Each structure stands twice: as C-alpha cells, then as structure tokens.
Image (cartoon, rainbow, N blue to C red; front, side, top):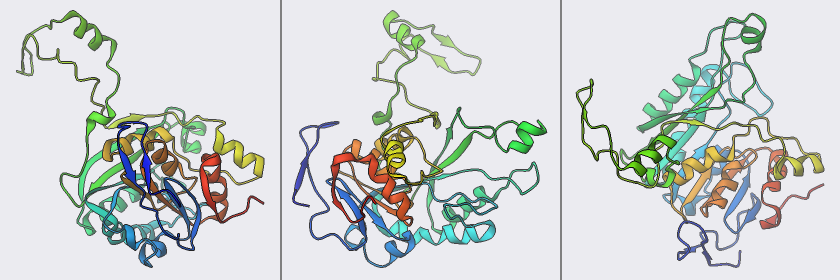
Length: 330
C-alpha cells in the first residue's frame, strides 16, 4: 500500500483517515484494497499466531456469521452438536484481545431442528449462552433478522405434512466486554411513517392520560429528530438474484457461497456501532459481504476465510479496487 491517508466522501467528508495497513502485508493476505485485507486460512490459527498482532486492541467491531450449529454437516464446514458449543467458545479470548475497550461483537446465528423430528433444537441458543457466559461478555441487545423471502423450511414439516410454519428468521447477538460500548442509533434512523410526517406537519397531538397511565403532553411527539429509531427486528429480503459478486462467480466458474447475508444487514450494524475510519473484522468472511459493506461505508476491514474457492469469488465484490492479489483467476 502506498497511501498513508484516505479522504472520506460520506458521513464526514472533511475527515482524513490514517490507513492502518501501511507496511509489508503478511504472507497469508489473499487480496487487498485501499480499505481492507482478505486473509486466507483458519480464523483460530490466524487470530492466534500473531498475524494480526498489530491490530490487537484496535478493532471496533467484530461482525460475523460463523457456520451455523446444524445437527448435520454442511459443505461449508460446520461443527455439529456439543462439539459446536466447545468450538465456538474457544473464539472468545481471540475476539476479546482484538477489540478496543468500547468495541463490539455481533454474531448471527441461525436455527436448527432435531434430525427427523418437527422439534427445534436449542443448540444455537445454548451455544450463544455459553459463548457469552464463559467469555464474560455483556449481552447488549438481541436482534432478529427476518427474511420474508426465505424458502419454506423444514420442507418435511412445512410443505409436506403442513404441521409447522416456515422458519424465516435468524438471531443476532450484540455482545461486548463493555456494558456501554460505542454505539449511536442516530446513525441508523429510519424514515418517519406517514402518520408521523402528518403529525409533524399538523403541529398538534391528541394529548391526555392513556389507559397505561402515561400522561401525553400536546407537544410530546412533535420534535423532528430526523427519523424514527429502528426496532431490534430487522427485515431485509435476501432476494438478490444477480449482482457483481454472482456475475463474477458465474463468469469465472467459482462456487457461490451458500449462506450469504444481505449487505444491508451488515451495513446496519457497521453504521450503528462504528464511525468512518474504524476497523471491522469478520473472522468467517465467506463471500466477504462484511468487507464490502465496510468499504462502502469508509471503514477499514479485515476478513478471514479458509476456503480458497470462496475467496476467489469474493474478489468480484471489489472490481478494480483490488490493489494486491495473491490468487490467479484461473
């Protein structure tokens, strides 16, 4: 990398950011951009062998979706059963040493079902609880990502026997060693509803005491804060059929990652929990949705991925922005 500083163009265009990637990159860098690096290898080994020693205590957000705790093996390499809980917990000390004192960890965790039975497994919940308690982390808040476009599953119980409804959400746990980590909901305000816009325009409110015994004043809800505070239920349809990543993979015959999340989900947490120039780490990079989202928002990023195939495909997210490439396209 030749650039020592980068000028922002988004949230604060006056800021010039020091590039943390100056110097010779380590040998396990698969590719790099001006804003980040993709590292090839197992995340526990890379986080534990000193490859990222210079970033210890400097990462503001670890945002990741580890292989889900399914009760059967998947192609992308998940642990199963009780071994999954033990495996996940080993990452706690590795994650904590990377964080700033006010840094955050956000983990997306899907649901699983007991094999051959219409009964949900508690494995995901137990894994998150063990990870939180054994690593002395605060559960700052739990989020739900609801995907209205998700295909009906489990198919046997939803489509065939019709005794369950489709499972369309995953959990995201926001954790931190700090009870009050860096965060601002002002960075993720949503557009006001039509009724709120009408209320602000009208300039008056139906005041009085409610059945809940709350006493609402005439101007209680008339302050324009620039948008509505979002809830912890996030709805993003994962329906993108063709984008730069998918086109690149198809053109070069790379395997598409089977468990991609929408970019808007990653961007919500990156905006909520970091500022331009902060560092975001994804230890299970996959198709590098996190890195691309961070770069779009002018945050520095580090992603780690064990699969060379998925790394090669993820380069399609960055186009001409790649400044170092250790893998050939062929």
